[in-house]
Image 1 (cartoon, rainbow, N blue to C red):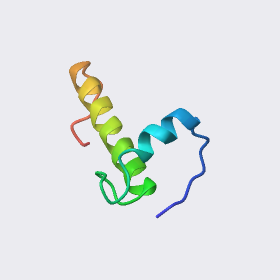
Image 2 (tube, one colour):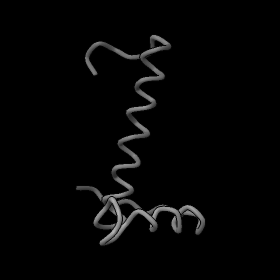
Image 3 (cartoon, helix red, strand yellow):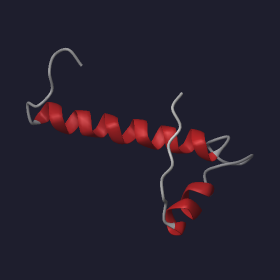
Image 4 (cartoon, rainbow, N blue to C red):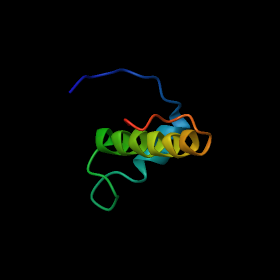
Length: 58
């Protein structure tokens, strides 16, 4: 799996950390970030589909 580095504003990281850990939805930050990216991509696909910009092959 490729690794990337990104700068994340402290406010977003604090919000994210509220969902990570024993009482959170995610085991670790990486899992939370991957889930967020996947959700964002799904939303963008929905928008593209409504706008007729998606190929049938995706």
